[in-house]
Amino acid sequence: MNYSNGTWLNAATAEDDIKIFSSLGDAPEECNLCFALKDAESGYMMELPSPNNLNLSMDYENSMLNITASAGTDARFSPEGCISLEGEQTDYDMQMVLNEEYLVTDWYYFSTKGTSADHAKLEKTESGYILSASNLKNIRAEGYNDEQDCFVQFSSDSDSVLFYEIDALTIGVKEDTNGDGIYDTEIARSAPRKKGDIDGNTFINAKDAASVLVSAANSGAGKDTGFTRAQLADADVNQDDAINALDAAAILTYTTAVGVGNEDLSLEDFLNQ
Ligand SMILES: [Ca+2]
Ligand SMILES: [Ca+2]
Figure 1 (cartoon, protein in one colour):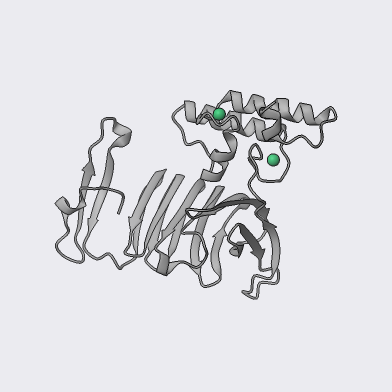
Figure 2 (spheres, rainbow, N blue to C red):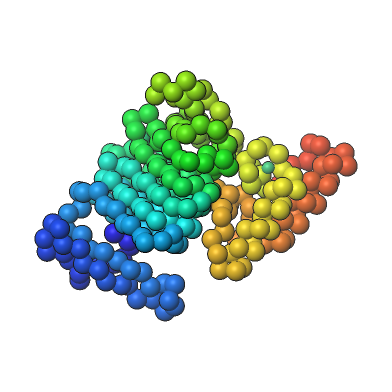
């Protein structure tokens, strides 16, 4: 469990043996606590005595599962493709990277990010990924492979949703409205990616600029950017490989230009003027 290139030095010798070691980095935040596990086909859980920052990875033969949480108390991994988390009003990011023969969609990478949850579970099924959580407000999900990257953001009042593939570029989100276990009602789908449209609602506006500023501030303070890979790509509107106030300013001046009568002006054309 947890990433390390030095696992072979710390091989566990029996199925119930767990070797604990740490990988060394130049700074304290680069030092990982690692666990060498003999039995790589079992589920594993980690319980913490009190809510804490978590960043855990589990390598299975067919998948790499990852959880990050701001206030997690219990994290579980299953080799069947299931990640679950308990915590106290925790923000979370659950990711799955799957080998080709194990895929259920066109995307080998799939992640969901949410906030303020006491429990959350992401499960791979034959029809897609099911996310169950105590709070499904403001959920972001992303799937990608080497060719395409798709991203969807939505809120739901239900207990769980199904993410499924509409086509290789489109994630659909369905609710089970009558609780019969069949996800029947589409509530959101990903839009084609557009630079500057950070929340993916097809409009480029001041809200997108504000989120770029928040993300840049987080990054400057050494925190997670809060953006998915697709959002990071769309946030760098001036394409200088940095996400900062210049990008936010470019979005704002563009929205102003559109607002004063240049409705058909694209962000790309605006920046090239
Ligand atoms: Ca937008
Ligand atoms: Ca930039």
